[in-house]
Length: 79
Image 1 (cartoon, helix red, strand yellow):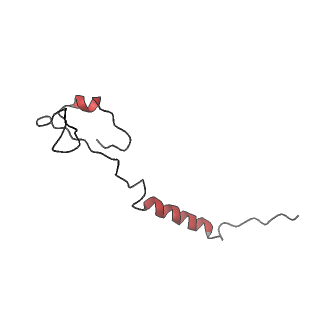
Image 2 (cartoon, rainbow, N blue to C red; image 1 turned 45 degrees about the horizontal axis):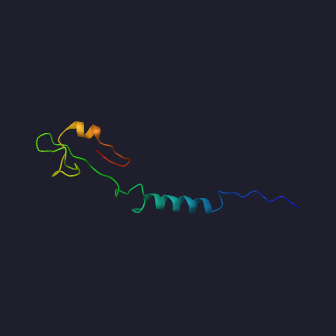
Image 3 (cartoon, helix red, strand yellow; image 1 turned 120 degrees about the horizontal axis):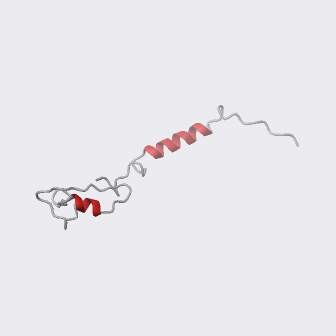
């Protein structure tokens, strides 16, 4: 049984096709990198806010930094 000759990957189109495919899916709008479906922005307004608000819009801001510090934020949440 004779040994196989090594494959020269520089002459093969497979690595280039794989690279382009991975790059395309990473940069596509369906990629998790671009997904903002789970992101949230929280608002604080010391004058008009209430700590009983949900804090997720300019119309329902929290009042105090104590509310922010007492809250638990998951990855992907902008504050």
